[in-house]
Length: 293
Image (cartoon, rainbow, N blue to C red; front, side):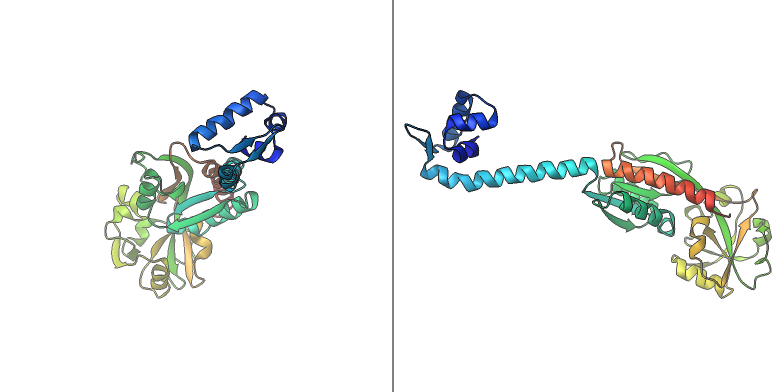
């Protein structure tokens, strides 16, 4: 109202522009003058004129008006996905196919939303989601573990494991292999505690592999396989990124370990997280339908 009166030069004209009564505008200006402790307008026989205090206040009032307009625009952008930030986390092998495809589809639909992505173990991302430091994370939680407090899990798919063998391995040309046939192989794993590896379902079913080499990095694992130092499990969704000197063989349906993949969000996800979750679900269905394993 102050800026409208300053622009119009009278309470009556400002009231007409704003759709208020002249007395309502006058009362509001008087209230503002009481608050700042100075007269903002000189009252003239015809209209008003800014006082010295009023001239000082004008640029500050314009700045407040502009900041409020910017805030409204940014809030509307969040609501309509025309802007904003989505903080996304994922475990490493999910970034081979699932996450990047979903991210590309999301960017095409909502180019104004910035997506920041961090990789790391699932337990880390569950903690960050619960703490409000990530908006959504793609994780692989244990099947029998309840969701962490402050986290809601959304099931995406159950991913089968494959066996990675050197190209010259005796079983490299097989269509499927039983885990028992590989019991004497040296298995390359990412953790000494097998319950914390891709072997978790197989170990729970009673299979105890011989673990001869520990390698946390996928490049190191597949390099060791290619050199004939052992065999390892590879998630089906990461199959396309396996190097050409490594053979992948399907595991027999009675033995195949599956990994549960979920999206983790807070109980009340952001608008952007909800939209990304919908894209993730669609991408998961496409990958499940198209995978040959």
